Length: 307
Figure 1 (cartoon, helix red, strand yellow):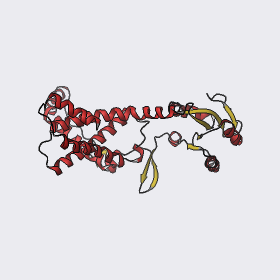
Figure 2: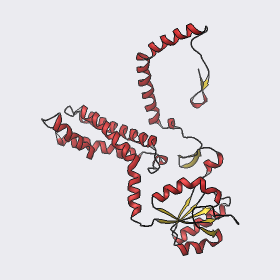
Figure 3: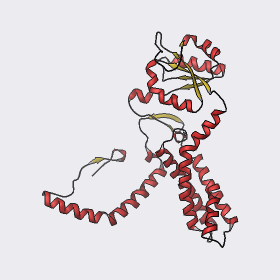
Figure 4: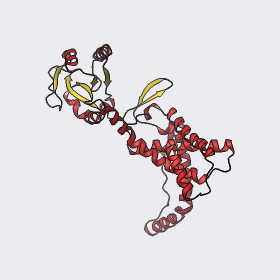
């Protein structure tokens, strides 16, 4: 909303000195915010992790938010039958909003999280449970957690005789000493590094955390075990795991892909293809006989073959 009014005042002072109908523009500003709010409400659960977004994830989120804003503004424009609103203003605002949303998606969650956790002073006292071979696997996660206010007090081995001396945190003993360790160090958070072999042990740890008011985290290392990236999904209330995400399962992504495919291919066919086809045809004729086009059958969406 702030960006909306900054852009409006900028155009007012530069290109439209005769002024704007501010009352009408207020409604468009609310429509833009409503579009972003609707996108947030309809976002799938796996897309709600804001802290770990990379550049591609932040850009994808910003583009999706911008699309919802554009649809909301267009719908309001059609329903209100407004002829005075500046279309150039709306297009310019959507471009600026996309940039602003990208920057906020990329950096703002981490900044807010660090500011929030800094109030705790020394951070959330965390105890790790696992074995020495899991340290390298979760070192990045632990590092990111430290930046967001998690302080590792020490590690506890879930294997008898496991040597924890190679870990960068104090070795506090075995899992049998857990009650004493939690009380002595005033642990606030318990993290199990990967799925233990004994499920009953996890149940006991979870019950202990509930009784003592500790936060219980179980790191999912299934992807590392099977050598594939695992994605969580919810299908009709049932939690499932898949080894790859299928973006085209989202109807909105299908529409976006179709629009991009059609627009980009149309421009390429009209401008680039004639010149390139002539150049390739001439080079082919000078080098070798035979047909110019090579055809091969491939497997497409849903396993259906296509040429």
